[in-house]
Amino acid sequence: MKPIVQISLDLVEIPEAIETAEMAMRAGVDWLEAGTPLILAEGMHGVRALRERFPDTPIVADLKTMDGGWLEAEIMAKAGATHVVVMSQAHEETIRCVVQAGKDLGVEVMGDNLASADMVAGAKRLEDLGCGYVIHHIGYDERRGIAARGERQPNPLDELAEIVKAVSVPVQAVGGLTIEQAIRTPEYGAPLVVLGAPLTIDADSFRTADGDLEASLRLICEKVHAYGDVAVGG
Image 1 (cartoon, helix red, strand yellow):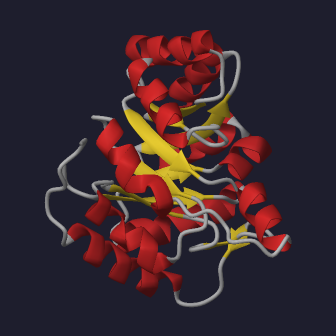
Image 2 (cartoon, rainbow, N blue to C red):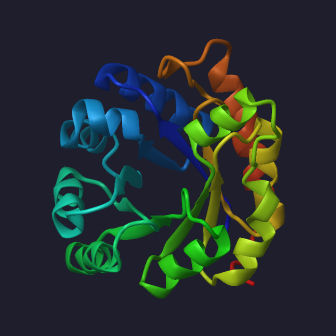
């Protein structure tokens, strides 16, 4: 598949999320993500505002669903989301409920392997239960806590090639990547490039990062889209 650039709107106010999304779309971003901070602050209203402003753009609702799977997916689907996120650590029945909601409501389901004891097995479990995408995710607290102890932070690239080989669905890598590393993920067979905290969002305050963000995003999009087709699955 052709590489896709997704921006995570890890913001807490709708006007700033819309403004950032407008800038991202001008720069060539393909998908918008209502990040977890926006979901927590504004819920379905944030997703609905993005859908009203961008009627034809895929919108990922980063719910990180752990329970109430069908209902959470339904709320976001009705608000205009095209993709919803369920966690690999959720009960099997919750993942099945989200997958069924996806089929019933016409939304895609992304499974997130955050905090899986075995990240590869977590990714495979998500695919086996019907998720159409896998998010290989090293968590914010995990990275910061390990770094505070003076240890090497885990990086999504550490196991990315192994995860891509283990599943047959598209993979995206999230959590602590530099811009250079994010751009390289298609080289590993992961065509969904995510830009968010701390790449485009100030991770400590959940606001738009300083600097000429639009120019940077434009260059990133040009580089990612230049990869051409990326083979999916191992």
